[in-house]
Length: 186
Image (tube, rainbow, N blue to C red):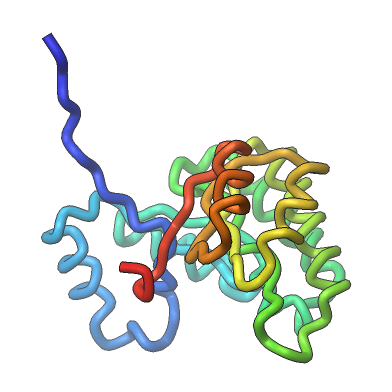
């Protein structure tokens, strides 16, 4: 006899802490639940958002991730990586803290400091590994760069809004990653 488990939808990437949701955040969460989304993960984008995503996740019975988004790296201080390490350590027993994220590389937007992105991304991968947490990766025209670092610091997680090649997809999957596809794909 074969047992079929019920399908459980998890939205691994919901910036519900963003100001755009101030007016209808509870309704958005309720609609997701009504549509069968069993869990939503709220990823942080910078140190200033760490406490906000944690509080929101606890209040709404959701999950959260802590990290420094590549679009926020240029305005982050070098010691923000130490603050991330401290926050991850403080949350080590919090069952709602499920990943390091949103982290990664963004090679789409011109003018971003790629060397700084690389340094922050590599450091955050090491923190994820040290805390035995998966990562939520930001992937915009940067799959090869992300994979280069993953060969050095093996972790698993989700490649959010993946839009790379079949070969890149296989490289992520072979490293234990799930691929997330954004609205453009669906």
